[in-house]
Image (cartoon, rainbow, N blue to C red; front, side, top):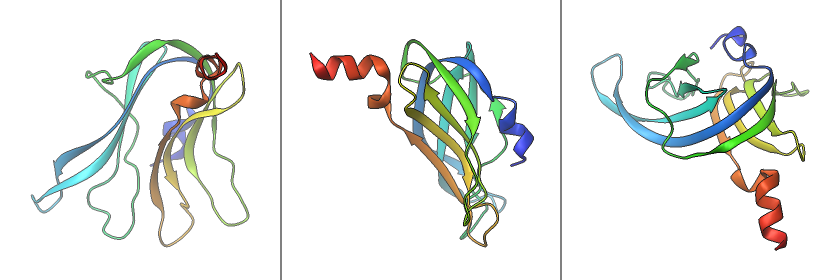
Length: 140
C-alpha cells in the first residue's frame, strides 16, 4: 500500500461506522483464502481495507478503496482526528490512526505496520470503549 493512499484521510472527520470481519477471497492461484477486512465510514463515505491474500508469510494491507457496502455496525457520528501512525526506532508504519477528539483516545488503527522489515503485518484494531461517549456510560 502506498502512503498516499491512507494519508488522504489525515485531518478532522466524522466517524459513523466500523466493521472488522473475515471474508473468503480468491488468491492469485484461484484458491479460496480467508482474509481480514476493515470497513469504516468517514464523513458519510465508506472505506474498505483488505489484507492481501497472496502475501504468504508477509501480511500487507491492500490499497484503500471506497465501498458500496456500509459497515454492519453504525453509530451517531463521532468527531475524530486522523493521522498516520508514528515511526519508531524499529518500525516504519503505513497505518492510519483515528482518535476521538473529546478524549484523545485511539478508537481505530488500520493499515500495514513494520513496512521496513522482512515481515510486515496487516493491522486492524478497533476499540469502541475508547469513545468519549462510552466513558460516560461506564461512570454512570
